[in-house]
Amino acid sequence: MQNDIEKQLLDKISKGENIYTDFKFEISDSRKISRSISAFANTLGGSLLVGVKDNGRIAGIKSDEEYYMIQGAVSMYTRPKAVIEYKIWQVKGKKVLEVIVSKSSGKVIYAQDENQNWKAYVRVHDQNQLAPVLLEKIWKKKNTKGILLKYSVAESILLQHLAKNKVTDQTEFKKIATLSDKEADEILSDLATINVVDHKMVNGKLIFRLNPGFKLDDYFLG
Image 1: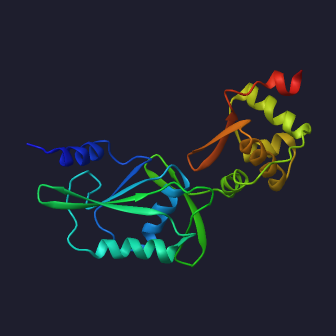
Image 2 (image 1 turned 90 degrees about the vertical axis):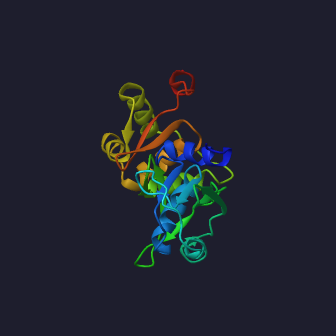
Image 3 (image 1 turned 180 degrees about the horizontal axis):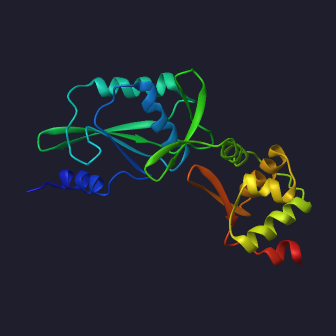
Protein backbone atom coordinates (compact mmCIF):
# COMPACT_ATOMS: atom_id res chain seq x y z
CA MET A 1 0.00 0.00 0.00
CA GLN A 2 1.34 3.43 -0.91
CA ASN A 3 1.97 5.92 1.85
CA ASP A 4 1.13 9.60 1.40
CA ILE A 5 4.73 10.53 0.56
CA GLU A 6 4.99 7.93 -2.19
CA LYS A 7 1.61 8.95 -3.61
CA GLN A 8 2.65 12.61 -3.86
CA LEU A 9 5.73 11.75 -5.91
CA LEU A 10 3.99 9.16 -8.07
CA ASP A 11 1.21 11.64 -8.84
CA LYS A 12 3.83 14.19 -9.92
CA ILE A 13 5.58 11.63 -12.13
CA SER A 14 2.29 10.41 -13.64
CA LYS A 15 1.80 13.86 -15.21
CA GLY A 16 4.98 13.33 -17.23
CA GLU A 17 7.54 15.91 -18.23
CA ASN A 18 5.96 19.29 -18.77
CA ILE A 19 6.59 23.01 -18.35
CA TYR A 20 7.06 22.50 -14.60
CA THR A 21 8.80 19.11 -14.43
CA ASP A 22 11.87 17.48 -15.99
CA PHE A 23 13.05 13.89 -15.38
CA LYS A 24 16.76 13.11 -15.09
CA PHE A 25 18.10 9.59 -14.69
CA GLU A 26 21.32 11.08 -13.33
CA ILE A 27 23.34 14.29 -13.38
CA SER A 28 26.67 13.82 -15.12
CA ASP A 29 27.32 17.30 -16.53
CA SER A 30 26.91 20.44 -14.40
CA ARG A 31 27.23 22.77 -17.36
CA LYS A 32 24.51 20.96 -19.32
CA ILE A 33 22.05 20.85 -16.42
CA SER A 34 22.46 24.62 -15.93
CA ARG A 35 20.33 25.05 -19.08
CA SER A 36 17.38 23.37 -17.38
CA ILE A 37 17.88 25.56 -14.31
CA SER A 38 18.00 28.69 -16.47
CA ALA A 39 14.88 27.63 -18.39
CA PHE A 40 12.82 26.97 -15.26
CA ALA A 41 13.99 30.17 -13.57
CA ASN A 42 13.17 32.30 -16.61
CA THR A 43 9.71 30.77 -17.10
CA LEU A 44 7.50 29.71 -14.20
CA GLY A 45 9.89 27.83 -11.95
CA GLY A 46 9.85 24.05 -11.78
CA SER A 47 11.45 20.84 -10.61
CA LEU A 48 14.13 18.46 -11.76
CA LEU A 49 13.39 14.92 -10.55
CA VAL A 50 16.76 13.18 -10.42
CA GLY A 51 16.63 9.40 -10.34
CA VAL A 52 13.63 9.19 -12.68
CA LYS A 53 13.99 7.89 -16.24
CA ASP A 54 12.40 9.57 -19.26
CA ASN A 55 9.60 6.99 -19.24
CA GLY A 56 8.75 7.84 -15.62
CA ARG A 57 10.32 4.72 -14.12
CA ILE A 58 11.99 5.37 -10.77
CA ALA A 59 15.64 4.29 -10.82
CA GLY A 60 16.78 6.22 -7.74
CA ILE A 61 20.04 8.03 -7.12
CA LYS A 62 23.06 6.01 -6.13
CA SER A 63 25.19 8.60 -4.33
CA ASP A 64 25.47 12.20 -3.21
CA GLU A 65 27.30 13.07 -6.43
CA GLU A 66 24.12 14.57 -7.88
CA TYR A 67 24.07 17.19 -5.09
CA TYR A 68 27.56 18.34 -5.99
CA MET A 69 26.79 18.42 -9.70
CA ILE A 70 23.71 20.58 -9.10
CA GLN A 71 25.64 22.88 -6.76
CA GLY A 72 28.32 23.22 -9.41
CA ALA A 73 25.71 24.01 -12.05
CA VAL A 74 24.29 26.83 -9.93
CA SER A 75 27.53 28.29 -8.59
CA MET A 76 29.68 28.04 -11.71
CA TYR A 77 27.33 27.96 -14.68
CA THR A 78 24.35 30.21 -13.88
CA ARG A 79 24.55 34.00 -13.73
CA PRO A 80 23.20 35.50 -11.56
CA LYS A 81 22.98 32.41 -9.37
CA ALA A 82 19.60 30.71 -9.59
CA VAL A 83 17.68 30.05 -6.37
CA ILE A 84 17.09 26.35 -5.72
CA GLU A 85 15.93 24.04 -2.94
CA TYR A 86 16.29 20.29 -2.42
CA LYS A 87 13.84 17.61 -1.39
CA ILE A 88 14.46 13.89 -0.98
CA TRP A 89 11.67 11.42 -1.75
CA GLN A 90 11.83 7.80 -0.54
CA VAL A 91 9.85 5.39 -2.73
CA LYS A 92 10.11 1.60 -2.49
CA GLY A 93 13.58 1.80 -0.99
CA LYS A 94 14.85 4.22 -3.65
CA LYS A 95 15.77 7.88 -3.28
CA VAL A 96 14.65 10.55 -5.74
CA LEU A 97 16.23 13.99 -5.54
CA GLU A 98 13.90 16.86 -6.38
CA VAL A 99 15.66 20.09 -7.30
CA ILE A 100 13.13 22.90 -6.98
CA VAL A 101 14.05 25.93 -9.09
CA SER A 102 12.42 29.22 -8.11
CA LYS A 103 11.06 31.57 -10.75
CA SER A 104 13.49 34.47 -11.06
CA SER A 105 12.20 37.68 -9.57
CA GLY A 106 13.23 40.44 -11.93
CA LYS A 107 16.47 39.09 -13.41
CA VAL A 108 17.25 36.97 -16.45
CA ILE A 109 19.13 33.82 -15.42
CA TYR A 110 21.86 32.86 -17.88
CA ALA A 111 23.64 29.52 -18.34
CA GLN A 112 27.17 29.12 -19.66
CA ASP A 113 27.58 26.98 -22.79
CA GLU A 114 30.56 24.90 -23.88
CA ASN A 115 32.19 27.95 -25.46
CA GLN A 116 31.85 29.92 -22.20
CA ASN A 117 29.13 32.14 -23.68
CA TRP A 118 26.26 33.13 -21.40
CA LYS A 119 22.84 32.34 -22.85
CA ALA A 120 19.28 32.50 -21.53
CA TYR A 121 16.88 29.60 -21.85
CA VAL A 122 13.10 29.29 -21.60
CA ARG A 123 10.86 26.31 -20.82
CA VAL A 124 8.39 25.48 -23.61
CA HIS A 125 6.12 22.51 -22.84
CA ASP A 126 8.63 19.81 -21.84
CA GLN A 127 11.66 21.30 -23.61
CA ASN A 128 14.37 23.83 -22.82
CA GLN A 129 14.83 26.29 -25.67
CA LEU A 130 17.27 29.11 -26.27
CA ALA A 131 15.45 32.36 -25.54
CA PRO A 132 15.21 34.70 -28.55
CA VAL A 133 16.95 38.06 -28.16
CA LEU A 134 13.55 39.73 -28.42
CA LEU A 135 12.23 37.71 -25.47
CA GLU A 136 15.24 38.75 -23.39
CA LYS A 137 14.48 42.37 -24.28
CA ILE A 138 10.88 41.95 -23.05
CA TRP A 139 12.05 40.37 -19.78
CA LYS A 140 14.43 43.23 -19.14
CA LYS A 141 11.89 45.94 -19.99
CA LYS A 142 9.33 44.42 -17.65
CA ASN A 143 11.75 45.14 -14.83
CA THR A 144 12.28 48.80 -15.68
CA LYS A 145 10.37 51.60 -13.96
CA GLY A 146 8.45 52.70 -17.03
CA ILE A 147 8.16 52.71 -20.79
CA LEU A 148 7.81 55.84 -22.91
CA LEU A 149 5.60 54.64 -25.74
CA LYS A 150 5.48 56.62 -28.97
CA TYR A 151 2.40 55.84 -31.04
CA SER A 152 3.34 55.94 -34.72
CA VAL A 153 2.20 54.51 -38.04
CA ALA A 154 4.13 51.31 -37.30
CA GLU A 155 2.23 50.68 -34.07
CA SER A 156 -1.05 51.30 -35.89
CA ILE A 157 -0.08 48.83 -38.63
CA LEU A 158 0.80 46.20 -36.02
CA LEU A 159 -2.38 46.54 -33.96
CA GLN A 160 -4.70 46.56 -36.95
CA HIS A 161 -2.83 43.59 -38.45
CA LEU A 162 -3.27 41.65 -35.20
CA ALA A 163 -6.94 42.60 -35.00
CA LYS A 164 -7.43 41.07 -38.45
CA ASN A 165 -4.94 38.20 -38.54
CA LYS A 166 -4.78 37.25 -34.83
CA VAL A 167 -1.02 36.53 -34.67
CA THR A 168 2.30 37.75 -36.04
CA ASP A 169 6.02 37.46 -35.42
CA GLN A 170 8.96 39.82 -35.73
CA THR A 171 9.77 38.79 -39.31
CA GLU A 172 6.25 39.38 -40.57
CA PHE A 173 5.81 42.64 -38.66
CA LYS A 174 9.02 44.23 -39.92
CA LYS A 175 8.03 43.29 -43.46
CA ILE A 176 4.51 44.77 -43.41
CA ALA A 177 5.65 47.90 -41.56
CA THR A 178 8.96 48.27 -43.49
CA LEU A 179 11.11 48.31 -40.37
CA SER A 180 14.58 47.16 -39.39
CA ASP A 181 15.02 44.31 -36.91
CA LYS A 182 15.91 46.83 -34.20
CA GLU A 183 12.87 49.03 -34.87
CA ALA A 184 10.50 46.04 -34.92
CA ASP A 185 12.01 44.66 -31.70
CA GLU A 186 11.59 47.97 -29.88
CA ILE A 187 7.91 48.28 -30.80
CA LEU A 188 7.04 44.65 -30.07
CA SER A 189 8.90 44.65 -26.75
CA ASP A 190 7.30 47.97 -25.69
CA LEU A 191 3.78 46.74 -26.42
CA ALA A 192 4.46 43.39 -24.75
CA THR A 193 5.86 45.15 -21.68
CA ILE A 194 2.70 47.22 -21.16
CA ASN A 195 0.51 44.18 -21.93
CA VAL A 196 -1.06 45.51 -25.12
CA VAL A 197 0.12 42.30 -26.82
CA ASP A 198 0.70 38.82 -25.42
CA HIS A 199 3.58 36.60 -26.51
CA LYS A 200 4.49 32.93 -26.44
CA MET A 201 6.99 30.53 -27.99
CA VAL A 202 5.65 28.39 -30.86
CA ASN A 203 7.97 26.06 -32.79
CA GLY A 204 11.02 28.00 -31.64
CA LYS A 205 9.58 31.39 -32.66
CA LEU A 206 8.16 34.19 -30.55
CA ILE A 207 4.54 34.79 -31.58
CA PHE A 208 2.47 37.87 -30.69
CA ARG A 209 -1.29 38.40 -30.41
CA LEU A 210 -3.48 41.14 -28.97
CA ASN A 211 -4.13 40.91 -25.26
CA PRO A 212 -7.79 39.79 -24.93
CA GLY A 213 -8.45 42.67 -22.54
CA PHE A 214 -7.16 45.27 -24.99
CA LYS A 215 -9.79 47.11 -27.04
CA LEU A 216 -8.35 48.51 -30.23
CA ASP A 217 -11.22 50.96 -30.81
CA ASP A 218 -10.98 52.47 -27.33
CA TYR A 219 -7.27 53.16 -27.52
CA PHE A 220 -6.42 54.12 -31.06
CA LEU A 221 -9.33 54.31 -33.41
CA GLY A 222 -11.66 56.54 -31.40
